[in-house]
Image 1 (cartoon, rainbow, N blue to C red):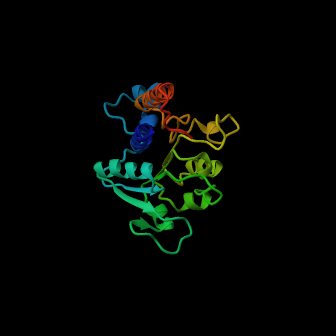
Image 2 (image 1 turned 180 degrees about the vertical axis):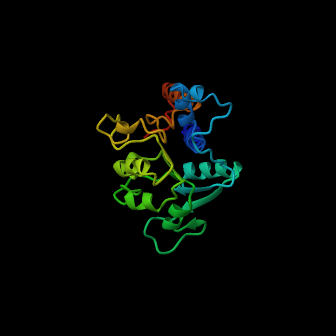
Image 3 (image 1 turned 90 degrees about the horizontal axis):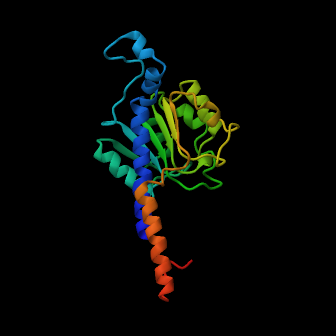
Length: 227
């Protein structure tokens, strides 16, 4: 089982970094400019219609200090980012290595979520938190859909309260057109994926290998990973 977790721990953080780069450099916006013929019409060699931000030197706020959060932190630090781990929302004191929740919200250039969904964390990021974030900041959620108030997120994107969002998880899955995020896929600063952050080829292969090994061990009378 540890091999599966190891591959998942790599797969999700890489998805976070991928979304971060795509949004920070406005790749979707530029792709749409080309698809719509805007660049071709302007006849400019270099065509700057969207801001392009660097990752190096930016501050990454991480909510959730488990294996996924820690691995995201390592990748971010390797890219030259400053990393802040957020303390639990509402806590008056901080554990060593953690920063107050509200401070992380206001300082982060990129905020990524890796905490479990509980009664306490439902709508952890709502209108108030989005209002407190930098207008140039990004929100990435590969944790659980209920961590973010989806309508508040769409409103924040439309009203330029934040610069962009990458979402891999939804309050209802599969999400349909009644979901605020699905209904606003046209937004150039909203990047959606269908709960696939954990599903890299290597992670899926590890799962298959583990399954085959479990079956072989069971046949040999040596059951393993028994629940």
